[in-house]
Amino acid sequence: VGIAVTEVERGWTAGVDAEGFYPQQSVSKLWVAIAVLRAVDAGRMTLDQPTVLTQEDRSVFSQPVAYKIGQTGFATPISDLLRRAIVESDNAANDKLMRELGGADAVTQALTEMQLSGIVVGAYERDLQSLIAGLTWRPEYGIGWNFQAAREQLPNDWRDQALASYLADPLDGAQPAAITRTLAQLRRGELLSANSTNVLLGLMNEVRTGPRRLKGGLPVGWAIAHKTG
Image (cartoon, rainbow, N blue to C red):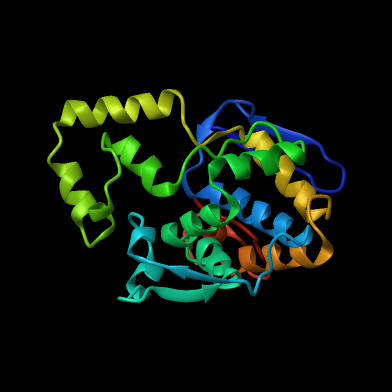
């Protein structure tokens, strides 16, 4: 377990193995969102910019937006995908946002340009989860329970080896302290414009996942802006 706590105004950080690299899973959606909003601030993208999700945009596990993809696809603006990715942790929405940016490399470049180290976004969710399971992504895995069924067909030792390899060197690894320091910078308005900062913090306040984690332990009257993974 790695834990980090950063005080926003004064900037001190305390933790346990706070500089170790740990898998992020859906926490990495935060960095995709920051990269998107940075592109919006730079005028390379707009929140009302239209996108169309097709059958090829399906992902794995939680992807509510995939149910809206019909024969002609599903047209929706960037702002909707952003909300789905952060509030609902929708994997298909997040993967589509990454494609609109130019892939994992584009997200990495945005983090580098913002001088944010200790955080890695190495792959689309569907590719990452396939790798962890010991599979290679195939389009049919995005339909129904096909992914889970294919995973169940693999020998246990194969799956265990794939998981161990991932945990030893997570493709989506991050340092706890790097995450909390970046969140502190976000809260101080150092990463994005005031409007984009408010947009992201607003979405993080609406997050529906993890109701029994940090959010569940807060006293009455407290609020939390978070992203579970």
